[in-house]
Amino acid sequence: MPGRFPLLGEPLPLDLINTAPSLGDLLQTPDDLRAWCTAQAHRLPELGADIDVADVSAVRAIRAHIASALERAHRGQRPRQLDLHALEDAQRGAPAITRLRWEDSGVTAARQRTGTPGQRLAAELAEATAHLLADPAVTTIRQCDAHDCVIWFLPTNPRRRWCSAALCGNRMRVARHYQRHKAGK
Ligand SMILES: [Zn+2]
Image (cartoon, rainbow, N blue to C red; front, side, top):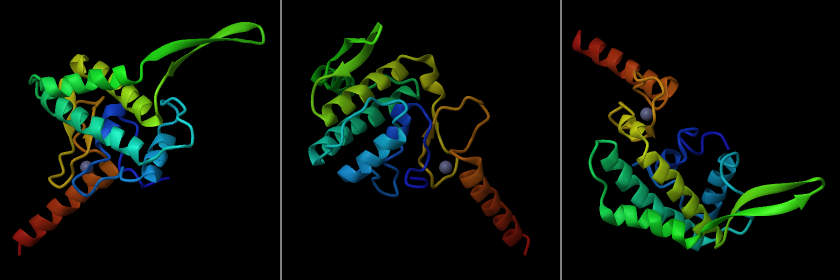
């Protein structure tokens, strides 16, 4: 669904906290969550069709802890213990095993979690966040330079300033041009 989510393709935890921009929460209903999972289907395990309000709450709850932990960690500050515990608890709530199956002529191995869709999703997102928090690159995470944009990203190019050069980059260039033009009058 193009346009429903502002920026996709950043590390999962960043895509997640980018669903709560100051403009309004993009994960409010089971439909929202389903759409987000569909957009992330290439890197999230299959959750099944039944997503309900409790699942949305579970994801929103972990999202708040993820945002809080990354907010501090990206500045090189120690995350709150409360947030780190929540990330561990979420993983404990839906532990993963490597499920083994015989298929045709060989054994297949697939990671699988127990729990409700919301618990599994929260666990998956908490685990991805754990890896991101422990990655030295966490301090290079930044927010879009546009004063009115709160989108987070992990720049692969250290000079990247905008969530999207085509959107915010352009918008700010136009605004600067307009300001200069006005000042010159
Ligand atoms: Zn932006």
